[in-house]
Length: 424
Image (cartoon, rainbow, N blue to C red; front, top):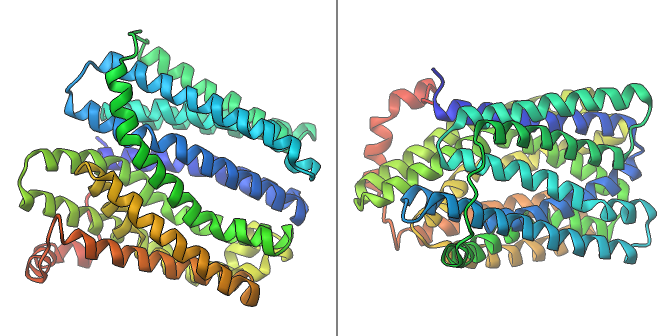
């Protein structure tokens, strides 16, 4: 019997594997400048989709777990908000395509609504499974998407029809297969959306969405500013390096889906000692899972570059190492952000990231013109460390953790630290 964390890890692995297969195919088969245009498009999609998801996921799960309202009308309200945002953002991207001089980027923006619909639909059904704590179904849905997408990609490759628009169409078709499977397992029970629930989702989500948007801008500022100061080739190299490092986020993305409901449940018990234990244990779990992956990437980054790309991407080695060093503290920041949402304080996340984004942009402005790729990596890693340190300082106001409490916790978990056999 697999634990929820293990199933969430497998579900996240399916999504990462689907993206990884596409990543390698495009890197090997595209000119570096052409891939730079795709990287810029994917960055825009990621930012837009993160904003949409922020309005829904944590707020919906929090309301669902608390069980203070009808789950049927809550699902309907969330669906209305979800697909409403997809239509709105997709229309904005379609209109923006007319003002883009580059033909490739213009065509991609005109088809951006398909990518938004594919991501939004898949993430919506996954959100429902997470709220129900049905991680087995979550894994199965993502597995279906992986199989459908991989088979379609193989077919496109054999027919010599591998273009960016064909890939976008394939993503949409593959996501629909997962949605159909979800509807078979959970036949929809229609209910009228509730204005009060829409208001609750909006009130919570406006801060969470703002936080997600700022977080994405924080992590994508380097790409956007490289696109402004340098060439599509430089953007492609940096995007390649950041994608390699992003795959080390697998434990964070998977286990975070399990950790957030646990933090909400701990907060409901209204005992700080239990919430502190859940918070520290969650950080320890993520550190034990992510640090070995980061070390492996640092040690074997050159071999990874050789295996996955061409000689055009050899300059990404130093960038990968610097980004990995900054990612060491990311588990602490990830759990801290979820803790604030669980405590009903999403506005604090928003305030912190607003300030951190300003720091990141300023550092990129200083480092990129003089150091290029290396400067962008340094700006990102230093900003991550600064944000995490600031978060732990502010946490003392709402959940003070003394040095003695931390020492006692680490001592009680020493066997797990030594063996790294934390329970998934």
